[in-house]
Image 1 (tube, rainbow, N blue to C red):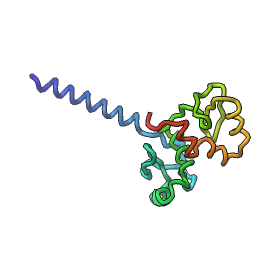
Image 2 (image 1 turned 90 degrees about the vertical axis):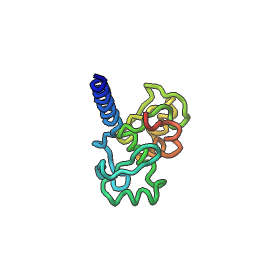
Image 3 (image 1 turned 180 degrees about the vertical axis):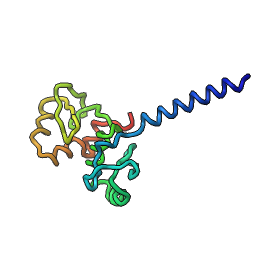
Image 4 (image 1 turned 45 degrees about the vertical axis):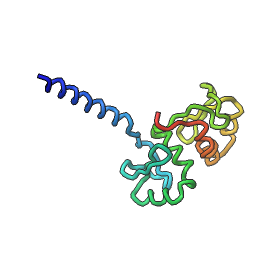
Length: 147
């Protein structure tokens, strides 16, 4: 008689774990390899700053791990694209963002605390925009991994 409730409990626990694992899976469908710019694949991934960076092939992990600093900005961008990192604050000031102060940076909606911060990004070229919003200092101020 006590076995049935235990089996039901185990089955429920297994189902909850499966749901949790699916919820944690990153969506790599729009992710680009930070090394080559080609579409990223789930099977070519490396751990990075509390998340995963998805690469295009089995050769790219070696290149990424050899110089993570070189590829960090694109890796941070990818972590946002894949839903592993969420913006919480302005990448310049670290202050709360305003809903009406946003701009698109390579397919990602980035929010700012004020028109001045937003204007800095909008005046920059594409490469500078990436660095301003997803470079190491900006990422540390503005984003949280694993929410």
